[in-house]
Image 1 (cartoon, rainbow, N blue to C red):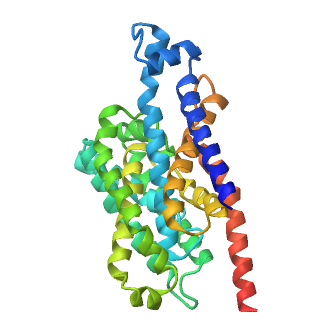
Image 2 (cartoon, one colour; image 1 turned 90 degrees about the horizontal axis):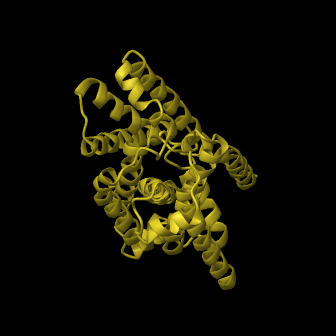
Image 3 (spheres, rainbow, N blue to C red; image 1 turned 45 degrees about the vertical axis):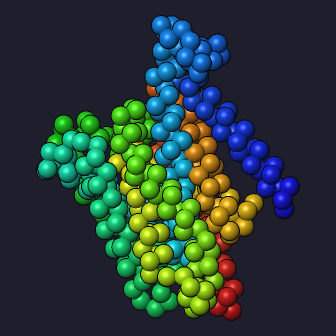
Length: 335
């Protein structure tokens, strides 16, 4: 087990380096290895190819940060709900954040990134509470299938509302038609600096709460007996998960399935210990999102396929498999 973990960490760090290299190398214009090395070493910035590489740095940096944030958000939501398919995109949280941002732009004339983040946070919080409450109605409490259905219903309704607001307004439509598909191409260093304080808070909270969430997985009574403040842990975990998701969505738009795929894959190697799952999921999520972004650029070169579309294509089969596995396990427990 220990050897397998070490090999996985070596592999994922190697993939991280390769995807970063690929992210700055591929695009509308391919660049040479020498230009990439010169850009990293801050040499010959007057060269055209080097300037192209430097222009891709913010996109690459944001891809890493966004992938890590979405993966950790998925881990926290799954730990909180005890549900294997809890994910910002499945629960409709991304869509709720998107709707509030579009409403702010269309009706409140909000134009600052800081305001986008808070609007996205409010929208994500309201949607998460609504979907969880909706899925708890009826017998059996919250189940994976009910949560998926409630999230799908909420996502469909909120997406329709978003489109209804955007379509009559050409200015809003032109500005957010690519953003709505999920894209990291528009990120700049100023945008990243706005997001960093929010993301750092989310990252620190998730690491801080990992031990308490491990205990909480044993059951409320055991956690209470071991001195865990259940209410506080759940509120802070929900806050961290929504903050990470909403902050990313405010800049990149709704990017789905990263928070669903990555935690399941990491648990196959590291088990359920969140002290390992959270940091390793952050690295794996960064690799996966950046890989999806590079793949989208290579498939549709010299244009690009938005990363949100690529992750949806990758994640949909895994989502179906997880739902099927969860239903089968539930039926076995009933029998």
